[in-house]
Image 1 (cartoon, rainbow, N blue to C red):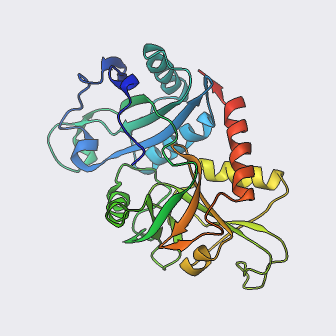
Image 2: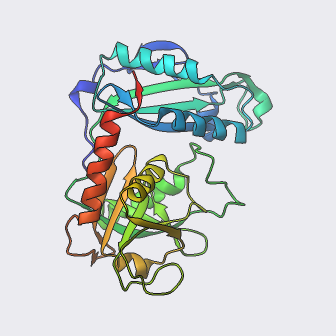
Image 3: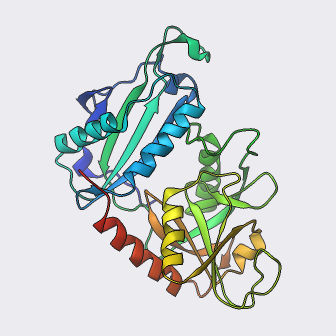
Length: 311
């Protein structure tokens, strides 16, 4: 496990409902909706060189998710950004920081799931930590979980909600297997994502594409977002690939296609781009970071270091 306690975070100041409090004194009410039923939405942000990449996109997704859950009010982007800036300033943070932004429905009059019980809210929590990318840059190992992503008519994956138990259960299986993370399939048996990231595969000429015919050029492929969130890092990587002349496709992919990909990597705000060296005991490619993965990793690092909202 790469994530360990960082001494720089011992005296963190947390943004909580418009107040700045020490991490050891930050308290959420037992009547808060997030405690009562995971009734909250969240975003993961990364501060690099004094900038937060794609902040507007993250806040737009937060707002869409809150609206889908029928939150009565949502703070404006300006209000949220102001709270992020206050929290970063209180911690003297400028680089190498991960920010967990949580918006709960608020506090209830009494325990229960009915949103009409909410007496106040929403509650904004800004948790900024010094945190390097959480995956080994030399490669990670995956297993396939028995846990499935639900169909969109059961729980819409476009809502970036705090009900993360399926991902946690998949991560438990990865831990038991001695792997870094777990591949999660959708309700139809196609690859959806991992418990924490989106998946990309590089198919070389001769491999079968989504149309079932052999490819005549290398293709960067990623599953659809039928049963997983529309990742912002995922979208950025697809754009970088297209701008760089790499053909891309999205579709439904099976475990066999994953095993036989020339390269596999995963993407996410907390970990950036991380190469995958094996899945279910099958070595991917030659077991090392591939040229397409390396190129896109470098492009992504350059982009996130030079663009974004200044804090």
